[in-house]
Structures are given as C-alpha cells and as structure tokens.
Image 1 (cartoon, rainbow, N blue to C red):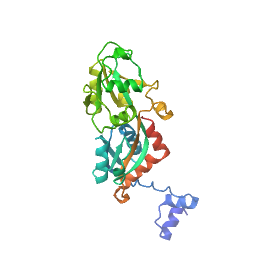
Image 2 (image 1 turned 90 degrees about the vertical axis):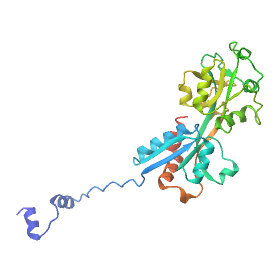
Image 3 (image 1 turned 180 degrees about the vertical axis):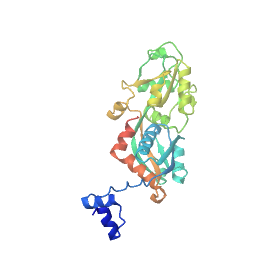
Image 4 (image 1 turned 45 degrees about the horizontal axis):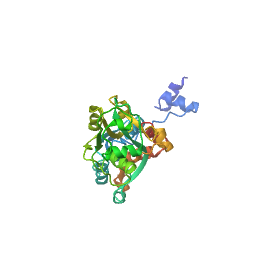
Length: 280
C-alpha cells in the first residue's frame, strides 16, 4: 500500500512534502526576520558634514530598505536647535558644541572636514603662507603681484558670521577677533561663495574641502604653508585649517526614535566611520 493511501486510512491530512521532510530529518527553512525599521526621517545641518551624512544615509538604506533619510543643509546652528526640539530626527554639524549646547544635544563624531582657501582658476598662485592670508584679509595686500601672481587687485570674500568655514578660518589665521578690511565682502552659502570667487580673476575666498569644491573647474584650492588641502594632510596634521564633524540628537534617549538610534549606532561602527571618512 502506498504511503499516501496509508495516511488516508489513518486520517492524517499532513501534506506529503512535510512528511517527507520530517522523515528525512530536514527542518523547514525559517522565515526571514522582518526588518523592524521603516519610515521617513529627516537630517539637516552644516554643509561641511553633509557629504558624510548623505553617504551614511545611503548605506543605511541599503541595510534597511524601508528607511529613508531626507538630508538637507541648514547650517550647524539650526541643526542643533532643531535636533534639540525634535523638529528634525538627527542633526549634523561641522564644529564643536559650546558649553550651553552640550546640555541640549548629544554629539557623535564622524570625522573631520577641512576649510580650503580658494582662488580663481586663472590665478597662477598655488600656495600662500598663513601670514600672507592674514595680510590679504586685513587689507595689507592690494595686488596679487605682491604674492607672486599677476598684477590684479585682490578681491577677498568671507562667509557669513557663524558659518563653520568662517569660524575655522578665523581661528587659524587670526587666533582671535579678525581685523577684516572694509574691502572684504561677506557671502552667504557655499554656492554664492564659489560663484563670487569664480567671477573675479583676483578673487579669493573660503570653502569646505570636498568633492563639490574640487569639481568646480572655475576655481582652485591652494596650499597653505606648503600643505595641500587634502584629507591625508588633515589626518597627518600638516594641513591645519579643519574642523570636527558630528551627528547631534536629543540628550533624552526616549526622544530618539528606534530607527534613528540604529542609524547612530551604524555611524558609530567601524564601517560607518569608514563610510563617513571616504567622502571628505
């Protein structure tokens, strides 16, 4: 008598395939564990940290397809306030926290970002000393010919007050309150800074070291005191105009969403730190 007929006589209704698996001692394959993280989340902050955060968000989505982070640039100050109030899920900043801010948000380091001195691509000058940069912004240099360049008027630009690129620049060049000349023009946002320097052959300004600045063929990042503005030189200590990058989040852990906590844990991991470093 066949096995199926025997089972029928005994009143069993177990599918034959299951019986075969059971009699062979092979367990049925387990169902895959569902991903507990899903949803739309927001991240905003300073432009210096934006490439690193975008890279982390993209990699995290591969690991957790149901999670999407919308990443935007609003500045470090705004990121801290928005993260503290919960109006954004996670913030990112390109400077250290002040004593007052430490009480408002937690901070997770994700590397460093350099501030480059940029000039118009037509400018033959490739290196300046720290003192020459100081003299430019103090109004003590009128023409590039004084610095080994062409006989063109120096046109200096600086970012708006509290921009991380500006505060890092000022700390390195002036070490205190900067004596800016009246000829120094204040520029808001990175795009406007790149356009301003590109618009004048004698233009000079500051910008975050990264792929966006490097890819702009209208201008060039120059060396300072013989050190080129590269990640290797920042890590090695020869290029000294740089600032730390952080993710920021509410100090109260109960206000951090599970998916955001997982994202922070990933950013803290060895792989996450490598992903963040790979884009700066």
